[in-house]
Image (cartoon, rainbow, N blue to C red; front, top):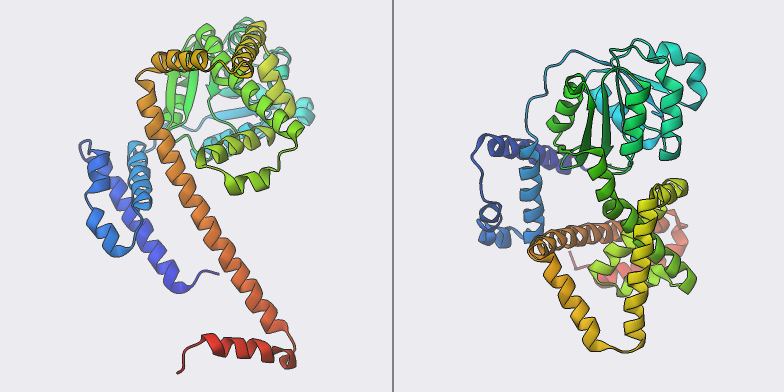
Length: 391
């Protein structure tokens, strides 16, 4: 239970943060660096870590970027196919909070398909990749020509083509570039692949942008090409590291005691992958022949570099490093800035977690002391007297 004094301070902080976001939203662009460094002396005087202030400034600036009145649009009737999954649940919350009427059609609901699909404004398909095309075939016969049809799968070309073939009304392919656990669209990217009748989706795209989301316009072909690197290759790399750690029987918990922040982030990414659905991750890697071939090429690169390590070929490895350095170019500057911010934020989280654990430990000890029989507390009382000042 929070102490009343702390509640009052927290409420004051929330009110002030709201005012800060509103002022930033009304102002011309203000340099982030200036906001962060302007109060260096005050921070020291107040005992506030600079990293904490930096996170607050960045957070409120991000909030200001999404600070806009909600778009006025008439409530839409939406059916989420697969809406009881995690991504479906996310869209249900967002659409319902915006005042739209949301229905769910899941595996056990097909007997009601006609009533759930026939007279709605939007049908959004949120099922796993391997079922998406099959589900589109199954639901198409129930759709009115005025109903907008969209999906959120991570493959766009064959799925968008199927929707265009099966449905005569508005069609669009969407791909949210985030997974379960995200609570808002703030700074999250959603790829948009136009199909037919884009105007029918404008209210949905406005909703995403008003919540801070970023729309990335793309052809389905470009999207699928980019997903080879963004999803398939990345997932294979992370998957491989997880399998290797298991095969080597690395003591992960103990390794974190020795870890740098970067290693901890790497382990966090591995752990995050393995909390997701195994079929989903595997299907993302196997989805197309292009993805499988790209993973094969990555494995060849791994093997080539490993051979250089085995041969102790220092000069060639340095050459490979420099070639990759040259290719990455200016992107490295933002990579250092972004990863440093992530490390600072992670360090703050870990410090707060340590404080919480110490407090829980203290409370547990106090509770154990309080529950002991009176006669058994003498030694405890003595130890207390030895450390408490005289009154």
